[in-house]
Structures are given as structure tokens and as C-alpha cells.
Image 1: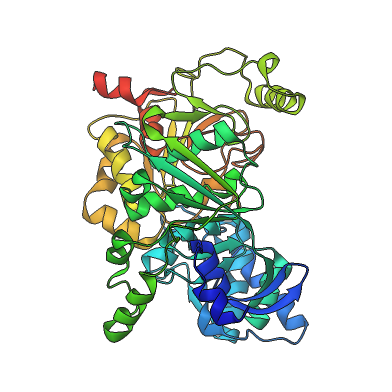
Image 2: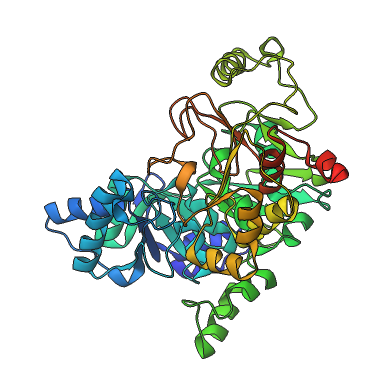
Length: 478
């Protein structure tokens, strides 16, 4: 089959259409050499990858297609600089030097475009429908919300992409998840994905690219779709995709790096062809009625350890298999919880609103709406960390920062912050933190930290009450 025939064949999924257009060469055994349209790098691994490239006497092949930012290692403290964290002092200058040497655009710590890589890519118009996009970060799947084919890669793959603008890959199996219906009040995209992962498992999507579809997805905003795709990796899938539509096109119009004038018209024509054909087939398809979903909260050490706010922590004796039973037992021990214990009412000491999952303007707005005129519990330290300088500016223009500050939250500078704690911003040992991040793994927010994943609205309620709280009851009492 010729390359043209592969691209134009009927019955193609969105994955097929983008993937096949980027195949450079068949390598045998299902492996293909893929052209990469955008490469994102960050301070934690980007500078080191460029150093390794130099040791091999290699240059970045297309520096104009590579973009860098400082996010993982930067302090989020007001008045920060690169020396505010030990990792920042070591890695930010390294990234800066090698980006300058290679001609790579860097959104540095003081740049007005700086922010978390998976936040600034879409908001700057660097992420576009139909592009292939990679980054040395597993949550690169976020960019699939705009109809881009995006996935995280390892260090050796990153060096290969930087040197050749290609990567070797095998097309993943295809899965479609249809979310149907309207969300209940007080239920958010974060709840949808936590529910999905809890029902099907953290490895359900392994080996697949997941396309999200259905009436629920069509009615979500662009930022809400990013939260959906962001958690694809927590389902085990490296790639999450949503077909671009008018919501996508309106979002991208007039972004700094979006096409303009005649280029916009040409791009739009191509983007409108990026949808799954009606006769396309998937290896797996499931449908979820979102009306069944209540506000969710994680209790354990995996996003799969999630329950409705009104449910009780499961008993390992009721686990469906031995591996699950052991996992639940380990989680209960680490989190210092008991089988059958109610999750609602559990005292907490920390709240973190931020990360590439939930640090965009709409996320902050949903939290601010709940805390306005209230005070953070004396037992809680609560942080709000905007996802980018643009988000921070827009939030301050609309007065969200003052709502948080008056309530007792700490208003911080953009970065990954307590999501991954690579900048020494930890949750203290033994403390329970309600977090809007995407992972609750052992030690993720700091040694012996205990993380409960939730939506920004649920996190805001916990900050005020000092305990894990049902947002529905919170609103009734407010």
C-alpha cells in the first residue's frame, strides 16, 4: 500500500490519520520511523539530554521545532529565582546555556510565557491538531486534547528526537471511550477520569491510544478536555486523543504561535478532516454514563484507589484477586487508614491546587467560587500554584488571587511545585494532602506524604473545613 493510499484509506481512526501521515519509513516487525513536529523539553531532563548530545558531537537537527521551559525545578515561592531551590540552581543554568548554544526557544524563569510545559503548549498555540509531539514527561498525553498525537518519551528517545527529528515507534492498539450524558452538579472532568481509572484499573489502557468521544466530551471546554487527556497515562495509556472541533478551533484562534491569515485557513481545512470515520474499528470500545458519577476522592497509593466521597474505604478481604488484595493492604498501611473507614471527614493538613492536571484558569475559578468569603482551617496549609504566567496574570486581573489570599491560601509562582516535589516543595511526612495533581504514588509529594487526589472544588472544600468534605454538603451549609 502506497503512503498516499494509507493516508486516504477509509475506515480510519483519528490515530490512523495522524500516525500514517508521519511515517518516514517501515522498519519491520511493526516498527516505524516517525517524524516529530514538536519537541518540548524542561529543566529536569532537557539540559542533561542536550549535554549528552554534545558528548556525541551531535547538534539539534531542527531547533526551531523544539521549545523549552523551566517548570519542574523552579521554586514556586513569591520572589523566587533560579537559586531558590538546589535543583533549580543546578539545572536551570544548564538548560539555559545549551538552549542558547543550540538556538532553542526557552521560556525561562522570568519569561512572561513561562509555565508548566503541558499548560503553555496549548495556551501559546504550539500544540496544534494533527501534530506529533513528544516530551520527556509522561503527561505529554495532555496535548491530545487538541487533536495532537502526543506522548512521553525516555532520555535515549529524547536524544534521538533532538538529533534526528524522528522517533522509532509501533502504532498502539486503538481504544475508544465514550462518555455520554451531562455531568451532575459538583462533578468535574477530574472526577470522570478518577472514576474511570477506579472502575477499570491503572493498566486498562496499556498498549493503547485512547480516543475520548461522546456527548459529554463534546460539551466540555478546551481546558476541561486537557484534564481528561492528562490522566490517560494513569489509565495506562501513553496517548489520549480528542478529535478537534469548533471548541478546539475557537480556542486556538489568535494564539501567539497559531497559524494566521491564509495559513489559518489552510490549517483549518486540514484540521476539519481529523476525525474518526464512521466505519472505523477499535480493538476496544466502552461507554460510560456520566450521570452515575459522584464527586471522587482517592484513598490509597494509586489513582485506581479511588471512591465516591460517600463511600467507605474497601476491605482487602473483598478484593477480586490476590494482587489487588496485597495492593489494598499496602495502601492502607502507608496511608494509615482502616478497612471500612469513611473517607468523608478524614482530617487533612495540606491542600495543593496546581499541576498540569488542574492549574488552568477555569480550575482556579471553580476553587475560588467556593472559598470566597471563607477562611482556611487553622490545621491546614493551602497552596494555589497557577500553571503558567498567563494563568497567573489572568487570575490576578479577575481578582482570584485576592480571594485566595484573603481566605488564607498561599498564592505562588507557576511551576510543577508539590505535584512531583523535585524543587524541594514537599508535603511533610505523615501529613494528608488533598491534591489536584494526577498521582498519589508513595512519596510522590515527599517522603511518607499521603496524597488524596480530587478536583479543585473538592480540594477547596477540604482547605476550608480541615477534612475531606462532600462538596454537595459544603454548598448546602454555605
